[in-house]
Image 1 (cartoon, rainbow over the protein chains, first blue to last red):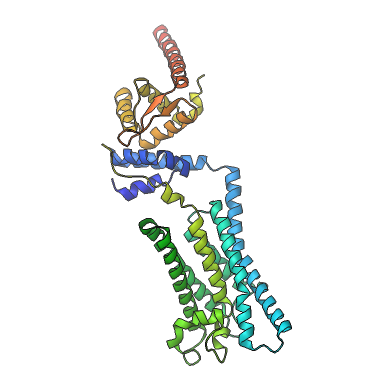
Image 2 (cartoon, each protein chain N blue to C red):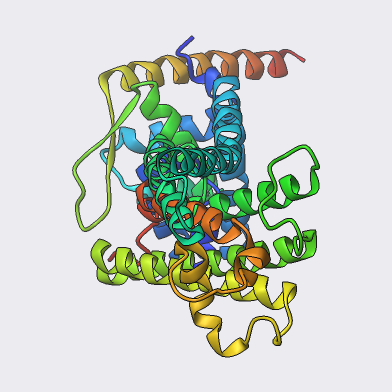
Length: 292
Length: 104
């Protein structure tokens, strides 16, 4: 019988039962004389067992975890805007004659505590282990909330006051989300084949690529080549989050606003969240070699 | 009552599993073979392990250390007593039914 099909059927069982009996059920399916009937039997029991395990406390726990995950993007967005505002005010009070570049640098630095908050939050939520498929759910939830907040007029908007549109934020966020889903899948495979250290390096590189991509998509959608020449596309992301380098007219910052910084925080959260969350599917995957 | 009726739709396969294990420890595949010979119907893997899980939870059977990457199960003392009670109940029900059929 096809190994992937057997894995899919065994995956229907609740984690505890999969861990205890998954290998044995898979062994019987591998050796089955009536594979169609046995697959149906195993799948039916798996669904029954899963339905039997859905208790009110579990539903409450899952709802609480989902709400917590949805609160993360909003919380980080508010914390980032608050930190940046504080940075601008303090810089103005301490050095009233500071140049725009100094103000921008100080403002960018104020986001570091928010990054630590994202790191801590990801660790806390991830270790709770109540969110399924963390590498998929975190970026998807964050992208969804970001686009919804971009629609709502009463919520803090990422992006600038002139070129900001829902379509640019939507495109940039969609590109970021798609890239991060791909990164999550690659990181999982790298972790299995090469270990945690290689997975961490892949996550960092993949995260940076996702941020580069989303910033490029954002700029391409917001400004034409005469305003922001395309040959500098690869420096748009680092420039927009640090304020370093040349952006004499401020066109880049006007085009992307705080979105690259915000997505950096989201990336940090999503990758950390996926790294610390227990992978129940992989832990319980049955061995499929038939026994003698 | 032994408590086997608490196993719901798994109570009948559970009795067959316990009868199979009454002859000595067996792993899943051997139980399937034995039950097929005994009852003429081979239980599917889901039915078998759904019943095994419930029997283990009730302390009526227990697993033994793996041999050849397979985990055998055996009846516990409580399982032996429960099976005895269940079979006696079945025998009483069967003899009553047969007696009534003879009278009719």
